[in-house]
Length: 246
View 1: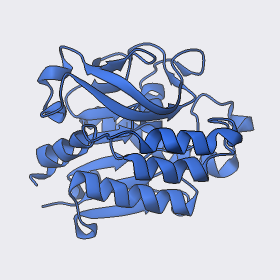
View 2 (view 1 turned 120 degrees about the vertical axis):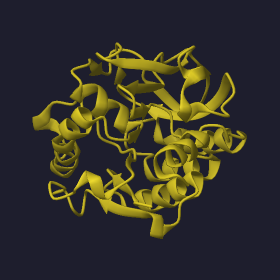
View 3 (view 1 turned 180 degrees about the vertical axis):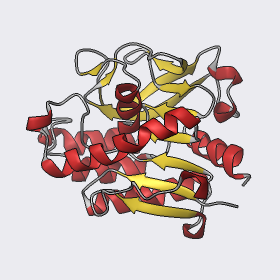
View 4 (view 1 turned 135 degrees about the vertical axis):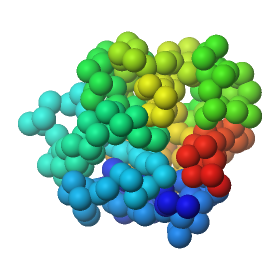
């Protein structure tokens, strides 16, 4: 089987390593099943040949595509530019792609959709999500109940459905929790790789990144520890099963 390409956008080493381990565990992959690239260390991915891989999984990150370019951290801008440079080929070929959280903004922005902080941001925590009629029939949501809880936390969001996209999952605070472009390009606003332990790690790492008041970190950790979230990871499992034959 061809490996999966995992592209990571987090410049914080601890967060990146923890996310990578979470993706492997939730997707049912081993290190030998994937090729990992941290874009903060290797931002030039123009040499990557898509046909060498079964599909691409893109992790989350603290950046926002809607921020003004001249106000972005130079490293975060380099990371964003790197993934954006490959989205054209992914889109045109309808190549298997799963973007998680930040990946939603990247896909929406690339497709010409409106991505900003005007509406639909969600505080760090868990939300009730539900499958749309289209979502109930999508391969990546097999085994996911019509209603489930997922971890979220994002400042910006897709404001309207981009062209040629299908809305698969919604929530009350954010109507676009999972999109499909054409047949094989997906993005989730929720975190399919995150369980309570993973989110606790991120709360500690990102407590000063503006997602929440730093003094609320301990309260948020207790909140996520009380959650038992297991359904979103099926999206990763199904992606790997569909495109890798695992």
